Amino acid sequence: MDKNLIFEIIDKIKGTKIEEVEFETPEGKIKVKQYVGPKEVVSAPPPAPVIEVKEEIKGTGATVEIETKAEKKYHVIKSPLVGTFYRAPSPGAPPFVEEGDIVSKGQVLCIIEALKVMNEIESDVNGKIVKILVENGQPVEYGQELFYIEPT
Amino acid sequence: MNKIDETILKLIEKTPVSGEKLSSILGISRVAVWKRIKKLENFGYKIKKSKNGYFVEKASEYLLPYEIKKYLKTVWLGQNYIFFEEIDSTNVYAKKNDLPHGTVVLAETQTAGKGRKGRKWVSEKGKGLYFSIVLKEGIPIDRFLIFSLLFPSVVKAVLEEYIRKTIYIKWPNDLYIKNKKFAGFLIESEIEGNEIHKVVVGIGINVNNENFKNLDRPATSLFLEEGKLINRKKLLADILFKIEHCLENINPEEIIKNVEKSLLWKGKKVYFPEVGLEGVLEGLNPYGGLRIKTNKGIKEIYSGDLTLRSLDT
Image 1: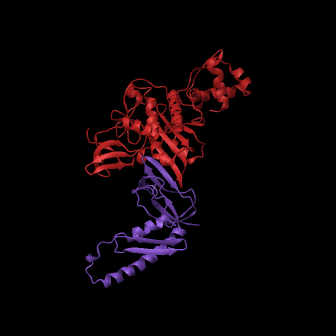
Image 2: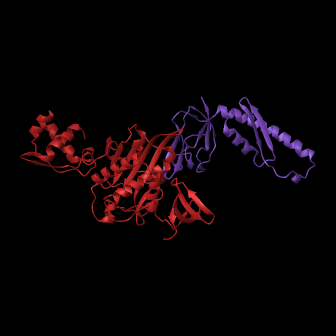
Image 3: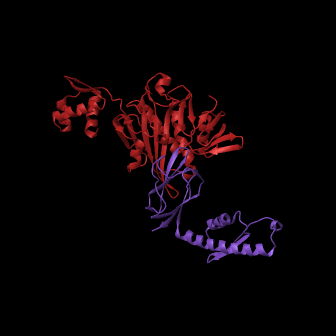
């Protein structure tokens, strides 16, 4: 099972009141739990929040399902190194790609700069850019997701 | 210059050879010989014409393939050598064309030499060393950042055999004497997935340059600092030889140590105006990033695109 899925769920429920998410795929079962603070803090009568939380779990469950499909459907371009993400070859120049663009294997998608080395990151598939996940000029970590591509 | 031109050079370098003899050896007309002699003169060769025939009085100062071959001691680096009297940018040419591993593209002058943020790199004809190296094999992606520090560290080591002045490395890879820049590097790579397909290392060194008018920041050359002209052919061959050796024996710890030893503004207060970061330049981390000691602890900088200034001057 894809580890990223677990991290995505953690991201989704972080900061919410959701205490637990559980779901099942043909590959297995995943349960993510988080500490949401002492129960006493909740001022409303006990039964109400419980119902609320249940509803939220349902909602999150649905999102997770969609994401599961997205994971399978989309090809993810990750950063091969630490650096600064640039969408254009130079300041003021048009970006290499926009969301919705059709790209081919070997086409430059962005530049990641580190120690003044300009690394042109190329697509390793043919497809359509579905989502660009990083803003121009932002620092990126090794392995950070940069683009979702729908392969054609 | 082609094979026939090189054959003529070889023949008339040691002893004078008559036009008639050249024409019979090469199987071309005497007019064709004369045209080729003119061409060689245009490439900077001083050729004497006497009753004994043509004779090379002085070799060309240009870094022509024929001249470089006399000095080159490498096994693979620069064995494929492309020379331009003038080009827009050697990096652009090396990126655009499918060239084999180890190719060196050199130009006597670049009309659109590239520096950081598209800044212009001024290259006086026949005075400096402006070239690009194409690498396609043996580039470790996990140690790629350190790989970029290898080049300034190697070039600095070679130059120390030529000049006595102290050379500093301004992180990540500019070379300075005192507070003036004289050499820069621009490295560009193509990465697909986790594989580096191609790296182009652009190297620009002001060697015998005398003129730095119209520049917005202080620049210098080895000639201006040392007061003597340097043999560019030998310098290029020495640099390529040392780079080849170091690429075959990449030692990250040693590269970090070497760069840290010569780091400009080490232990001094520096700041990055674009991000408003200020602190003491402590040194490098094991990945080649810069360690800055700020009020809020150590910050690690990887972007060589940020302007780095000293606060102590």
